[in-house]
Length: 209
Image (cartoon, rainbow, N blue to C red):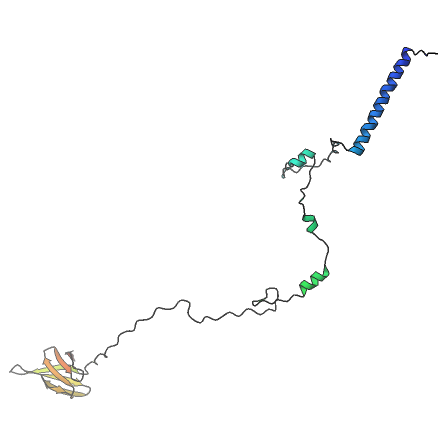
């Protein structure tokens, strides 16, 4: 016996079929998302709002961070494996037991003696050699006589009055006084005397009393 389905029953069957297909499609999509992964990432959660400091401008996010929509720290490969935060007491004891073995002063000890500084053995800037001064014979001593007057004669000759200490000598030209001084020439205001041991002639001016 054939069943007759009315128009209202047909609509209900169609609606039920569409709902069934939608439910099945949703289940398949959820199963693929959880087990097979999704090519499109889920939208990130909204970032918390914070007050922006006016004196410090916000830095632009990097290209990788901008693509993901979040701020990510750069990771350096191989660094985390070499960092060991564990304390090693045996290493610390070994470092403390080390003794300074250098030749200079230990700058880490207040009881270390200062290093010995070598004394200068020669002047830093040598002085120029001084040229020797040529030394000749010493100069002759001055004649120890004083000429204090003379006596003139009619023939034009003169006699000089010479004083040597407390002794007074009257000498003409050519005479030797005190066995040492020879009278060479007598002039009105001077007399020329020669010191015989030194062979040195000097004029003696007239001394006014």
